[in-house]
Length: 456
Image (cartoon, rainbow, N blue to C red):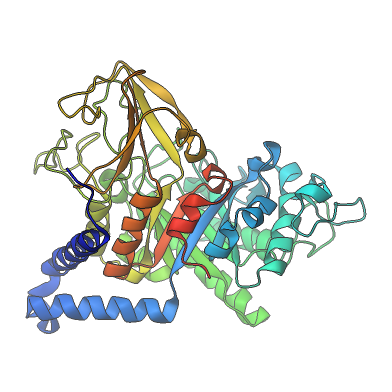
């Protein structure tokens, strides 16, 4: 099958966006006189979404890992690759939560203590012992000075640091204590062991990455109370950030990283959450991967569903089948149905690949939807791009994948072409933008960020 032209991709994405809006509006149409005409409602919703984005602006959020500093990935890499010009925001991963429910550094050496040499520094000068802070925090400050429109946000939690979220969100007192500590540390810049306010002005807000409310995640304590407590925690943060913003004469950002899986998302009050945060970064990746140890091979971040997908479909008796059929389109439609507006949704792009081994070519010779005998170690995009094999672009799902018949290895990932189709989808539906995990997976010349970035 020949590769779809840009015109055909644009038309397909536009039609899909209209279908998503129709699905999202349908449940409330009967109850709303303004939505009595489905055709008018879809057009009105699309126009409203576009207008909202015009006023709020598209975002391209790149995750910068705290630990990258140990493997030679510094903030300066974003300058040399040109990626920083395509980003509107950097989310720094991660802040921990201490057992007492307060924000705490997961690695203070990487955050503000490790000296950075001149060759690795954004401004070309080496850190000295006279500085109050060094490490990543000082490099983020230098990056922000060089690119004043760039926002820097502290992300709290993540897969490994979400252990104490449930307790921190449990009561009005614990929520207030958590929010106050995070604002004191990252907004007011009061880091332990250094002069008060030494880190002030670096961070423009916080992102909450609780993985996941009322779900075990990485072996985390959890319970049904988490669902509403998550909403209340965000509201407390919003209130305290707004108070800090009034005192400083500015507005601080609050975002949340949200699950794509329908089971995890079902434990979140999507509508209320979307009205509290500036927007939600919905983690539209890891749909399929190496936890499915024998396959079948499938896509980890496909834009559209496919009738050929062998994964189980949702049924009334099993609405959340394990490793079931899923796509970015379906995830966005689900969030819209639950009350989120398009301009509160940013979709996510993986800068890494999942892989399977022992994969037969199958009837089309490309290894797609075939069983596997084992799994490959996850690798970054800059590594999978150099792996042997043929790159394929599925014309149905919009997904990229690579198959090597010699080693019988199958990789699922995003590349510039599949990302460009997602950008078309974002624009057609009036979504807020995109987010990626993580920037160190890109090539030295920033191929992926250049494909997905809305920065100027």
